[in-house]
Image 1 (tube, rainbow, N blue to C red):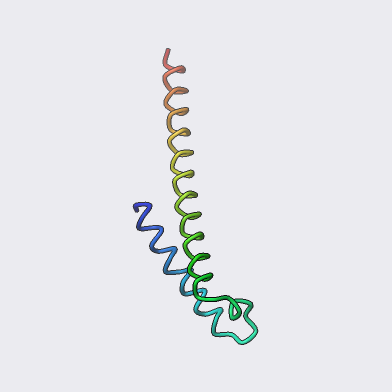
Image 2: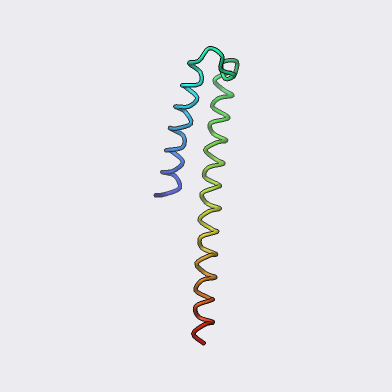
Length: 75
C-alpha cells in the first residue's frame, strides 16, 4: 500500500468521523466552522503520512541492522 493510498483512506475515515460527530446535538464540533474542520482534517492526514514514513524508515533501519548482524556472524 502506498503512502498516498493510506492517506486517502485516513481522509475518508476522519471525514466520516467528523460527519458522525457533527450529527449529534451535544458534539463539540458543531461550533467549529467548516474551514477549521478542513484544516484539522488536513493536519490529521499530514500527521498520518509522516507517521507512515517514519515507520517505513524504522523498518529499513531494522532490516539493515539485521543484515549487518548476519554478516558479522558469518565472518
